Amino acid sequence: MDRDNDTENDKEVEKLEVINKMNIDLYTIDWTAIGSVATTIALIIAFRSINASNKQNRENRKLQILLIRKEQEQKRLDEMVNNILEIIHSIKPIDVLDFSSKWIDKTFTTEDRHKIDHIAEQDQLNNIRLNIQLIKLKNYPTANILLTRLNIIRDLYGQWVKCINLLHLHLESRDKLSIEEQTVCITNIVKQMATTCKKLNPEYTPIISDICKKKNNIIDIARELMNIFESVISSQIQTHKLALEPELYEFVKKEQERIDRIIDAK
Image (tube, rainbow, N blue to C red):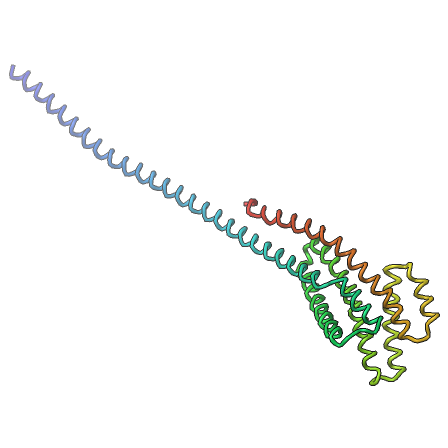
């Protein structure tokens, strides 16, 4: 009886020892597993956080670059349009007709001369601004087409300003120049006017030839040619200005649409 009890007690002790051992093993395994899992989860979270942060930074940098590019493109377009509008506003076909008529009719005043001087200065400034624009926009083919037409208008206006300015200047300075010197100077201006008129409107070629044959006085020839010259120049300027307006609208419309799409490129 006692032996059986001892045996059962021994078995209970063994069971308790096994259970205790299992509890110790489970206790140790639980902490190790939990620590490992926690570390892994933390690493995954950190990686995802860093990855998301890097992705956001890349997107932000790309957006900033696109915003800067859009701002630069907008500034370039606005600057070009403002220059075009300022130049075209300063070129008035009515001035060609008005001042030319006064010079032909010998009613050209000192005030008119000052106005022509101002127009000549403005024309020189316009020429410089246009050349700079063409240099800056050399890789801007659509702008080159537009600026080339504007340059034609400015060149026509500049030819007229130069001719009428020099003619009046030489006539005012007749006391300071010999007849021969005055004749040479005015003859050169007459040749320039005749060449321009024949080039722009060949129909005037026989008329110009008749004027040169019938008139002996070079000043009279200059006045007759100025009558043709003013008509040809003002007509050409007006024609090009009318063509420039819709071209400018279309150019600005397309460029603005392109600029507005820059942000969408991201």
